[in-house]
Image (tube, rainbow, N blue to C red; front, side, top):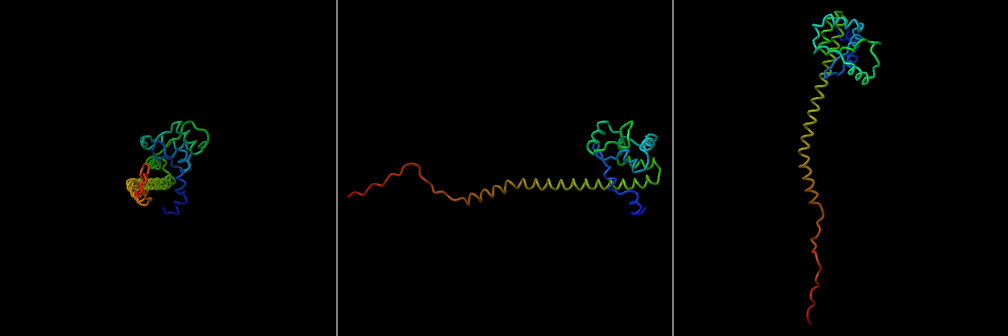
Length: 181
């Protein structure tokens, strides 16, 4: 498959916008996947349920009603395709890979290639951010250690540059006695 063929399927950016962080995992939801695969959500879920042995808990889980409500409020989605009996399923990267074998269509395979690339790109971005955050933290720590030393140097310089006041004696000055004649 050429890059031109992949571009005709869907851009990676479309997939990236449909990857959510739920329960500390990057996942895609069944309504979004059904839309990308151009199947009904009901058909996708049925195919999964017929092959549950291929979808262990680390591949797929069903959202709770609280998770769904929170997700809807965060991304301002009123619904995915009308009324639903249950909450959507969330598929991890491995679960999405397994979907192409369950759906068995050419489009599912091609869409999965794009989805995997989106997950890989996301992982690379996160790794880069973590690396940058670690480097920034190291720099901050390094300069915090030197801050006290730099402040001491500036304090010493300020003390040297400060005008010296003459020592004044405390008390009254006694006039010198007049010479005797």
